[in-house]
Image 1 (cartoon, rainbow, N blue to C red):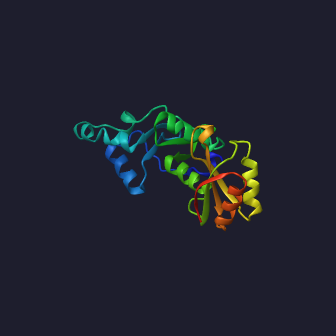
Image 2 (tube, one colour):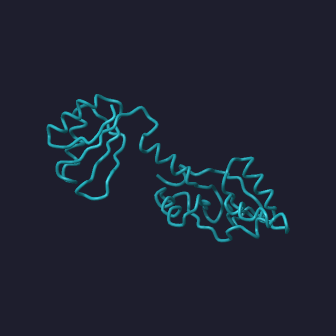
Image 3 (cartoon, rainbow, N blue to C red):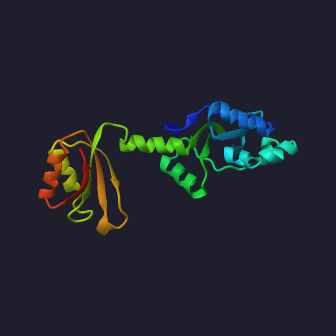
Length: 201
């Protein structure tokens, strides 16, 4: 999945000449936590977050601070065709809440932690009516295809698969399935030597 499919298009922006109070009110009005800062030609010149603004509320009451004074002048960006995993990695590595999205140097969107979390929830099928099986394979890695086959043969349709533990010896695969007779699938897996650690019908 690419950033373009999950980003917010036509994001709310602000001028570097705007006051801190204007930026705070704009974020409140639109219920957002980040603002791309653009010049008169709508080119991205900076990025500001609600945490940046909170840190300068009191100083801004004493002196005339503008958004340009406190913004991040050279923010990390991504392109619309970048994979979502890359955006998630950049956000995690730099401990930030979002990224401006640029195409040919032009601001076309914003991608945030919330956008990425919503994509993850969709991919995992968490909000769909579903069943789940957490399985420790008989032989780690080697039997993954066999488990998938057994699930399919017993009318289980796999929505997504996640890994619940770190080490290969203790690796548990979490299979999220379309709603089905999980007990039937569980019996078939255990008859083949796999351990069903837990399940949700």
